[in-house]
Image 1 (cartoon, rainbow, N blue to C red):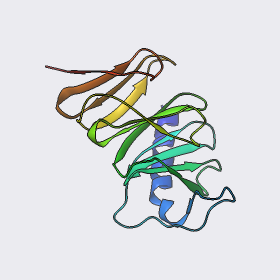
Image 2 (cartoon, rainbow, N blue to C red):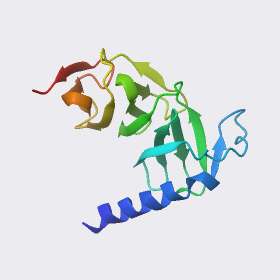
Image 3 (tube, helix red, strand yellow):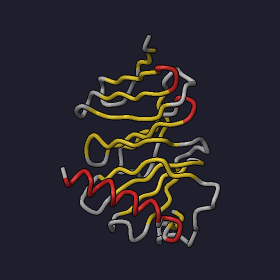
Length: 160
């Protein structure tokens, strides 16, 4: 029970100190200093290793650390929409959900992200995977998006 509490506290500390340590992804040389603006909001952090984590936010924020939060690289999400939550069902393969039915996927450890069609305009606030193939995202007005093929396709239903 202490490990989840430790991760929650660590997550809060990382999110609270991000503004001073973000660099912009650019020419592959580490980027340039690019502090977060006060209007930008951070919504989720997920650890994918002992010292590696991803952060989601608005507008279209995806931040990546491989040094336990000492520094972050800003990665292009290809959108200005809010990114609310992240999940990595296996190393190198991850998903992000957000505003207007947004689902983004990476198959290369986060270097590139591409949009997956959901057929819904409802906001998606959370995503989780039971295993490498079966995942669920949930959102506004009882919206549930499911995948059974590792995130290649999504089926959207609404809870009654």
